[in-house]
Length: 289
Ligand code: SF4
Image (cartoon, rainbow, N blue to C red; front, top):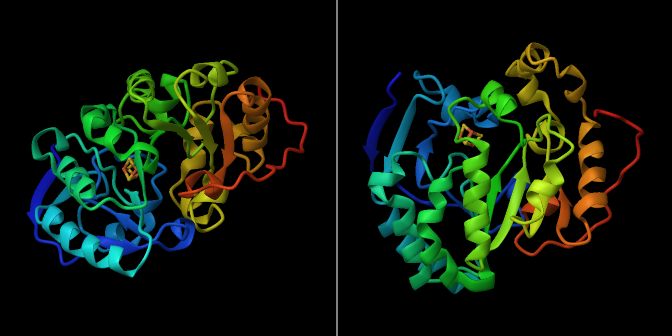
């Protein structure tokens, strides 16, 4: 089905950081809607999706005045104090149509004119590497966080068939790291993965952050539960991974195999502008491999 794309004029562009993002002063969404249509997307359960007739994943609103608004709102916000921005919280800033609109790119240009104290770019699209030239200019004040929920393409296809392939995401993160930009691999939400996952991440991520439906959907897993995600686990024979303790297995594996070189973080701590390293609890004796 072809996505419905619409130009809109937005009233504002910087949203105060709340909930899981309350360590950021603002979140920034160049688009509303998202054509990656991940089955587990918690935004499906938020008003932006619930009060819309079209199904989540079939529409995108393009905030055509986003750059002008950002220039105004960022100037104002910077006068009030430090500004830390999470882009983006309820869409992917690198929608396929970003190839043509270059809207997210225009926001990076505005942020280089009026630099925030920190910018976290969250995406699952290899298109982000197009903007390496701009992202480099933020120096230590930016991080590119690539969602890599699993290293298994069959699992990615079962849970997020319209999202970009995992190898392309890994390759993009590699190029971004090689360009000297701080990189993060976000295993968020963590999906069933292989034992080789840590070694695949070692050369491409400065940091690995693990999050899951129970810690990260803002409702203790209830929102995701309503989406019927457990059916996909059953269909793929991965039922035992649908477990609030599954992350402990992967956390331990990451810490043991690559923790000497790569920072391993958990849930909200991995999405803070200036993270404090906290002891992540590992406890249960689960075996998945
Ligand atoms: S890319 Fe993010 S915003 Fe888009 S559908 Fe997937 S989880 Fe939701």
